[in-house]
Length: 162
Image 1 (cartoon, rainbow, N blue to C red):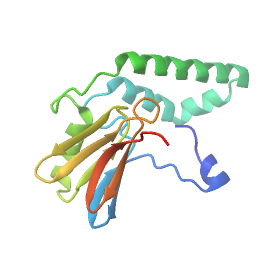
Image 2 (tube, rainbow, N blue to C red):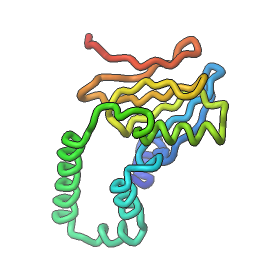
Image 3 (spheres, rainbow, N blue to C red):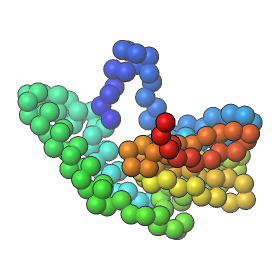
């Protein structure tokens, strides 16, 4: 969240913070990380507001680096530990926040063919409505999953190794 322009200035990589809609092979894709989208995820939404607040960022920058790195490492480890404990299996269409988000987006833009997100860390390939599909990429560490767009179809695949 606090990358600011570092990657852009150093190697030309732009951080895209909100979902984007693009066209590829005649299909419309909405792509994003997925964090804080949909009706739930209230703890994350609160933390995100705190972390993206300019005053909080200014205050954190005033801390001695030893303390700020300790806090950052502690928070990162705490977050990872809790994510592993709290990462439930597929909850069903009515309880998956990103599926609810996709449905809301389809009301605004019926031309979206594929939604691609990753925040959930669980591989999900789910049909939405008559023609759209939601793909959650899962993660590379535990699931080795990724998506491929070929011949106008988006599929979730698993890397099996070399």
